[in-house]
Figure (cartoon, rainbow, N blue to C red):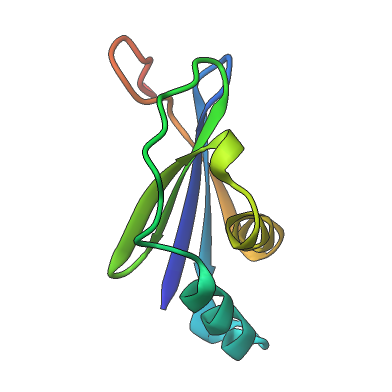
Length: 102
């Protein structure tokens, strides 16, 4: 199982991604319980918040995008663990007018 957390936005529009191979973790059972407890189907809509972060969280077959203020409770625990454990990559900014690597 693979968990991917992407943080997008902020003032500079930067994107950072953390990739966790859950099955390779020594505490994979704890990861699976946490992934199963987050409310994947109960994310209320929220308007975009300019200059604040948003998080895209993917773990097949699930995918959600949360505004920074929505990352609470089990979502916060999941994001924090992914950031502590996962392989971190910087991604180019997304969107119109974003500079692409040459």
